[in-house]
Structures are given as structure tokens and as C-alpha cells.
Image 1: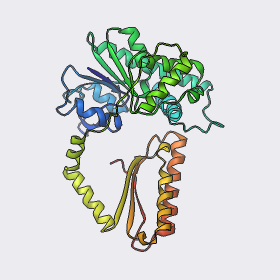
Image 2 (image 1 turned 90 degrees about the vertical axis):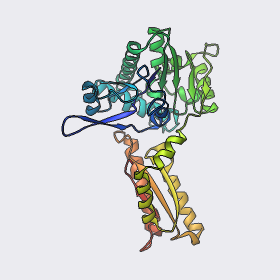
Image 3 (image 1 turned 60 degrees about the vertical axis):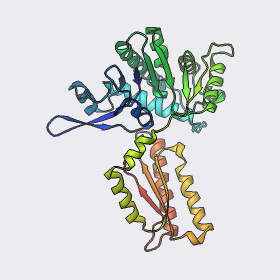
Image 4 (image 1 turned 120 degrees about the vertical axis):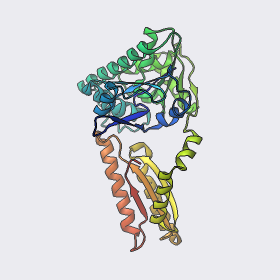
Length: 349
């Protein structure tokens, strides 16, 4: 079995002596699939995980053979930095993420100009690179699990190379509806839909699967042959979460939080700082709660563990600034000498 994802299950850090330390990677894909392949799961020498080297340490670790002995055969692709940036920042995060979450201010964005076309060529190139690496590693009749919107074209490229493989694509975000997908240039929309329609494609909910099916039929034609999408509520592994919660580091963090808030009630959220999470609205709701329920003032603390994300995109920087301003407004309005209503923690913990 081969898992193909943009971000891998481990990230690597160079030590002073030139060796590398492997740390478990972040993100929902790793959280969901990691327990199935790592740490006593299905991980065996004939299981492979193909991902991108996310930085120089990752690439150097792969070149030095530091990816061996981790419970799964890990291959990290050393992509061209410019091509990788265009693939990831401009197309994947700057267009597809906003498209599927319906976050575009369409009066101003998106712009399909010459820069986008260069970026789309890079997106195609990176997807072809992943398909080629999978082709090289796959045994006859292998199962290939391709993950998420960054690699939407891999299934089509791989089917052309290896019709013997059993290929499934799973999208870990919503999929936009037929009206929204028309925002894309026709050829881009057709290439995306054709790739996912040619084999089993999975989504977290029936609604998202239905949105994909409707979009594919609108783009490819109502009579197009589309393999029926499926829904699977893939989520974190409860046993893994329980084990992490019982570790000394987690207990120490809980103790530190208890010291910080004392005997007060706690509202807690943890998220990436990104527009689809509606984080400022949560603070506005808390502000309204304190306004409406005076008895809660001084008795409740909103602990917000929010770590920065995609800081190369202006929309994300603006969203982070909006979050900081929202926290400041609530605290300036309600804080007392011994009570801070919102405790903001921006560590990636």
C-alpha cells in the first residue's frame, strides 16, 4: 500500500552533530492516517508514504538516509523551490482552498492572469512528479491512497501510467458546488474534475461528495462517466489521543493552564489562524456573553490556542491581525486587575 500526500508523517531537524531528529508531522492528514501506518499500525517494509520535503532539513535527511527505520517506507521528494512555492502557495492555498471554502471576495479575487498560468503549470508539474514517484515505487496491483486537494491531478496521471493500480483519492476539505467551480478557467476545472471523476473519490460528508458529483457533471457534461464518490468521516484515532493526553508533557501543560486560570470556568478552542475558522466571530460571541451575563464576568476565561498558518499569503496575515485586534477589544473592555477574559496562546504546540 502507498500513501501519497503533500505533507509527510515526519518532519526532520538537523542536530549539531549533523544527524537528524524525526518529529511527528502536523496536520489532519497525518493525525488521521498516522495511527494506521505508524507505531504498530499497518506499517511494514512494503508500505510506503510519499510526500514532499517541506524544507532543507527534510531534503537533507532524505539524502542522508535518515528516513529509514520509521515504521513505514518514507520517500520525500526534493521539489524545485520555485515550482513548489507556486504549486502550494498560489494554486493550492491561494485558489483551491478559498474556492472550496467559498471564501473569495469575487469583486476582487481570484485573478486568473499570467502569474496564475505560471502557477498552474507548476501545480501540474508537481502532481506529475508525485505520480512518477508513485509509479516507480508501486508493485503490480498496489493500493494507492492519494490525499487532498494539493494532489488532485495525481490520480489521472497515475492511471495513464499504471492502469493496474487501485487508486483512491480522498479530499480533506469541502468541494465547491457547480456554480462556484465555474469561477475557474474552463480547462482548469475540467482537468480537476476529470482526474477525480475517473476513480473512487472520497470526502468527509455526503454533502461534499454530492457537491463534487454536481460540479463534475456541470463541467464535464451531465452524461459523463463519473465513478460515484463516497463519504467517510475520517477522524483522529481515539486511542492515540488518549495516549497523548496521558503523557507527562500533556499533564504538565494541563497543570500550567490550571495555574493560569485558577478556579474559573474555561472556554477553550484550538485552531490554525485562518479565515475559514471564523475565529473573530467566536470572540464577538464571547463579548456578547459577557455583556448579557454580568455574573460570568471574572468567572470565565476564554483560552484560545491559535497558531499562525500560511504566513506567506496576505489574506492570512490580515486574518491574524483581525484576530489580535478582536482579542484586544474584548480584553480592553472587560479585563480587571486580576482577570484577563481572553488568554491567547499562539504557540504551535
